[in-house]
Image (tube, rainbow, N blue to C red):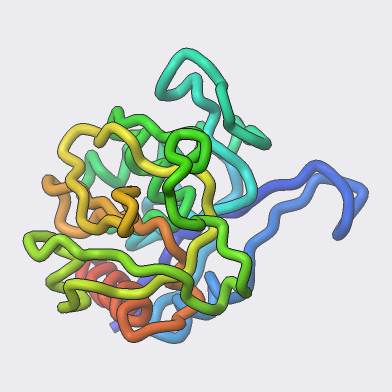
Length: 238
């Protein structure tokens, strides 16, 4: 059997550091975590005119995170605390997310990808966790991202629980926004001790999960189970 092709979204920068010209970027561990569990990563350039061809190739989609926020105009009227908007990327990711949901194509949203999944389904976001709840735990961890920093309680009625078989896990954390109002057909599958939503899933789809942490670092057994189960399911979707 051929290995599943996993479409994975890229970040975009206009200039600086790598090149004086616009460039795409992705951390190596996103790609190598897919390879480790038997998938072939297929980085996706932003092109709405080539979606039919893209979806004729891929067996599943991963929407990655990045150092930016979704334009609040997609889910509410005002930008209160959002940072570094990348609307072109968001438009592209929302379109492919909706295609996955409409066609029951496996999709994993990571960090900002979880937020994108919720907004695509009509949900909203907390624009800044600390400003909305001064008692919130630290969600932008100070220790290295390849270490865990806080716990997440897992909903035992969720698909995520069926995958990892744990009621409480420890995760890394690199976000200042989070899911607020849940989108259509979206349920909460995990929460932090301060009540912040850490994972969601679409109950109408066979494999549609968003997690606020970064399982591609493969820090814990649960991280490995999430990535491996997604790849396995995508292979069956071929």
